[in-house]
Structure formats: structure tokens, C-alpha cells
Length: 452
Length: 123
Image 1: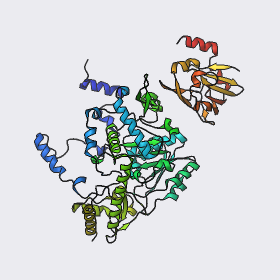
Image 2: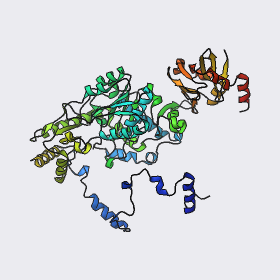
Image 3: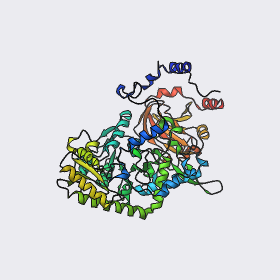
Image 4: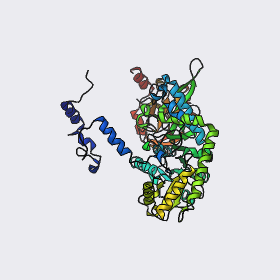
């Protein structure tokens, strides 16, 4: 038997069966301008391995990397110290090759890790149950909206203004196909999040209110007040945490009334990695567990009464329930979840609280120093390790000019919200335990320089 | 009170214009231990053949179809805590939901007990 049915005749036959004249017909959904009509212009056809390496190294050297410069970027991806033991442990052969378990019972070690991971996430979020992880924070956020629609049998989601705009995009993309109505407006450069506005948008058709905590500008929304309003209208509260280290210092969303808590786990144990792979976190109240997406690992006893682990409640999943499954996700971010779990285990509850206090102290030092730069105003009344500044000039330009001076000075709101002119002077600045006094001095000097 | 059966192994008891729906003893035996039942809400309008209800067992998640058209009036609340009632007492205490029939004529397409027994004997 051959496994390569790829002769031109066979391809032609297969295309004939599905009614396509040529392979390109299958890519009709890709906009023409996004397709490559031929070879990449200027790219040589052949080069030696050494020559390619040299060329690529020279290209890479044009980047300023997070570790090589004063670094203040955040907005959903955070640079934290990752202990060397995390990388060492995740690379052990027993762990490294174990992806989501498709023959779960023989992978007891992997299942135990997932069980521990779930327990950590549930405690961190203040919810009763958490799954074995999702792809990333934005897809977890969409899955929460979809889950709330199943629970409430309603199809209107109210997204707070302070939800990360990339998460908003993901939700809108998916909602195009499910028909959920998405209510969202861009944030304003104000000291407090728009709690009254969120509450006013809730009505009898609302499936859920989605609130980022801390929000995109680093502000801390009043979850308890929003939870009360949502519940009074029969809607769920979905809390989104993009910086889980913050929960070492501020109250867990589940304890403030959130019914579903999702987030991005990258900050704990996973590097910036050019934007991925990351780690979606997902937890909820136990009464909604049947509507929860994703893999779920449970603890049980075997025939001899010994502790063992199994994948449980699989009838929620697509391989059993087909099109009626809670989600098409039948996997988890295994290696990133492992790194998260190991880092969390090394920290412990006290370590996490200490790390969180340190982050907050560094951010306070940075905010105090930057507010002294002429013309610069601190927007937030409260923040954890990230805050917004209002500059007297366009922040995108300022960021570019600071990079020319060797400082990665933050994320401009103009980059996140290119269509919102009112946010053009906004700059998000993040400080973590990695931020030194010298870094803060370098940033304030660079900012002063580019604004002068 | 007449009882009718479907080829999908639901039964329906009809009392006036009110029908009570469940799955048959044969069906529960095929499904194995039932762990959860997803029930419709009162007020849901069903067309014959809709799937308002899902029975989860350790083996599978199975749709339960509406044997006739109508409006749901009540679901069996006892199943929330005791889904195993569908195993132990499928054709009485383990009923799933009640509905008001919108077209009693649809009953004529269903089987009686003797016809259903003959049907499953062939399976």
C-alpha cells in the first residue's frame, strides 16, 4: 500500500470529486492581495546553510530584544524572570514529548501535571473548576462568550471598553459565524474604567459582560458592582486576566462574583516568544462545568483503590459529541501549561504574593519618575504593574524615537487603536521585577529627550 | 393512557393534549450508565424531530428527539441530581419532559408497544 497519493492524475481525480478545477480554487477565501503570485522578489533561489545563517543573524541583530535594552512593553504579554529550573524541567524527556494525551490512561504523569495545573488555575482565579488550558487568552475569551451564550440561551455580549483590542477582534471574528451580537466601544484616557457605562449596557438580552481585570490601561475595574448588575439581569460575568501575576496582590475575580474567569498564562513561566505559543487559562463555577470547553482532567481511584487520573466529562468534547460539542478545541497547550505549573509550584502562594508586590513597587517607582517628565501625565488612579501615560505628543512617534535611543519605552495606544485619534497621545508602560532603577532612569531620560 | 414509541427509542404517554416523553428501557441499556441529562426549558417550541434534550452516558452523548410537535411545559427536575433515574426507571420516574401537543395527528405515525417490541427484536 502506498501512502503518497500525489500523482498529478490522482490530484486531478480528487479535485474532480470535490468540484474544484485546480488547487488554487481551494484558496478562494484568501484575498487576492494576500496571495503570493510567484517567487518572493529579490530572494535568491539557493544559498548555503552557513550563508543563510549569517544572513539571518545579521537580520536578527537589527532587532532590539527584550533582554538587551530597558524594556517597558506589556499590553497582554509580560517579561518576567523565568527560573532556569523551569526550562530544565520542562525539557525532561518524560514531559517534553507528552502532548495532549490521546491515550490518556497510560500517561499518568502528564495527567497529574494537568490536574495540578487545573488546581492552581482554579485557586488563582477563585473558581471551583478550571480546564487543562486553551490556545491563548484571546481564544479563551471568545470561548467564555460562547459558553455564556449556551448557559443563558442569549446572544448579546457586552465587552467592557478596557478589554484588550486584540481580544475584541478575536471575539468579533468568531461572532461573525455564530451570530452573537457584540457591544464594545474604545476606551477613554480616564483615571477610572467606565463602570457605569458597562452596567448601563446590560439588558434582558445580555448573555455576559466581559471585563478585563486589570484592564488594558492597567486600571482595576469594580468587578463586584458589575457582577451584581449582570446577575440581576440574568447575565454572567466573564473576567479576563491578561497578567496573572496581579492576582498575587488583588482579589481573585471568582471571589468578586465572576462566573467564568479566563486569561493569558504567559506571564508565569512562559517567555515572550515573539507572541506565541502562549497559554489560555479557563475556569468557571462548578454548576456550569457541563458547558465548559476544553479538556478536563479528574482524579479518581483505580480498581485497587489507588489514586489515578483520567480525562473526564469528555462528552462535552467534539470527538464524542460532534457538532453539539461545547467547542471544537480537543487539545490543550501542554508544554506551556507545564511551564506555568512548574513556575507556580516554585513560587508557591507566598512567592506569588511577594513577586506581585515587587512588580507593583517597580511600577510605582516608574510611574512616579515618569510623571516628573515635563508634559507627561499619569492617567491611572490605581494600577498593578502597568499604567497609562498621556504624553504631550503622538505616542507612536515617541516610542519609535525612544527605540532609536535604545529604549523600548512601552506600547503606544495608537498602535493598539489606530482608528482612535483621541488615544494617540496614550502610552502604556509596564514594569516588572526585571525593571531596574537604571532602566527607569533610561526611560525617563529617553522620554524627556524625545519630547524636548 | 396510551403510550407510543419511536424508532429512535423514545416513548410518549398522551393524556388529553399533554405528552410525557422519555427514553425506553432498551435505549438506556444500550447507553450504559447515564451521567447527565440536558433538559429543555419550559416554553420551548418543538417541531417533531427536533432534539431538545441530550443524554450523556459514560459511552456517548445522545440526542433525544421530539416524537411529536408541541410546546415544552415541564422538564423532570429530579434528573439534575439523579440522572441515573433514567437507567433505573426509564419508562416512569426517569421521564424527561412534558409538552402540549400541537398536532395530535402526528401520533398516528408512531408505534404501539407490540410494534416497538417487534422492532427492537429485529435490531
